[in-house]
Length: 92
Ligand SMILES: [Zn+2]
Ligand SMILES: [Zn+2]
Image (tube, rainbow, N blue to C red; front, top):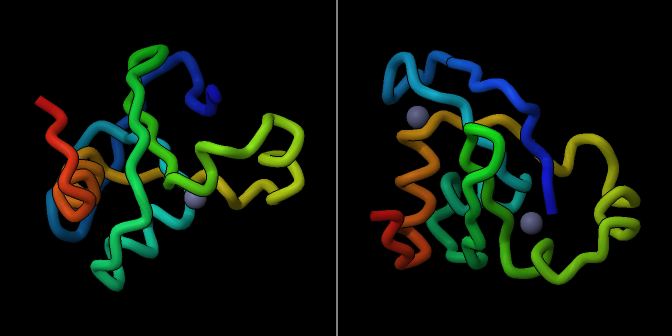
């Protein structure tokens, strides 16, 4: 699935400062809040990292659209790495 726009944006994170923006499903953000791993299927496309949880990774494009426009949210790259680590995923 492709979510990211073609350009790389920056965002300022309360924990990590100015970082490249990444795009994740809202369940990845829930993992950051509660520490509960939900899967982390990541991909680098059009200059930005993207990741979705295991459940969203199984959705078809049509099903993902039904989840609504807030399914995918911007996240700082530092938080992206934190979420990967919470899921036992090594990005390097
Ligand atoms: Zn998800
Ligand atoms: Zn951050």
